Amino acid sequence: MRSAKSLLLLACILAGVNAQVRTYQAQQGADCDGSVYTVGMINEVIDSYCVDLVNQKALGNVDHLYRYNMAVNSAISHYYLPLPYVDIYGRVLEDATPQHFAAVQGDCQFQHVAKFKFGPPQDLVVTLANREVCDPYYR
Image (cartoon, rainbow, N blue to C red; front, side, top):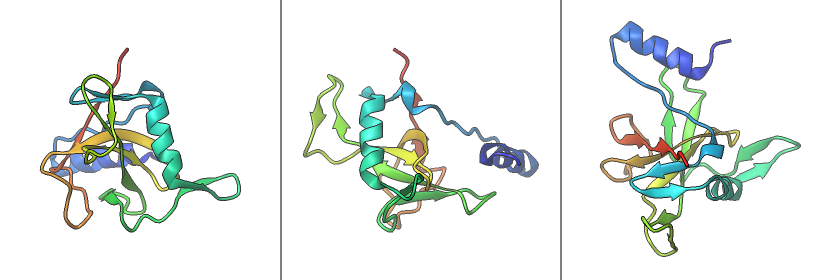
């Protein structure tokens, strides 16, 4: 069985679209515009949205979350969980509006950290044009 990443890249090649799918391990953390998110911060946010269903994690209520549906396999979605705002000095600003989001699948598997280039989508549907994947954090 092919992975969603392989199928997406194959579809892009066949359609003549230049695309890149970026995922990385949560253990690397992420750097988004100078805001660094550690693995602990990312996992804490993911755990706050996930429930344990008999030894299997799943996202709770996803109706209010931003989401991206894969074109090649609509059964696979990335849901965007708001991360706390972290300034360039590493301070978490509790009252600030989230600028960066942890993308996870419905089974709570981390995919990447991203930001919305043109602000959060009004209809909760994330597009490739509006999403920018942040870099993994290299220590």
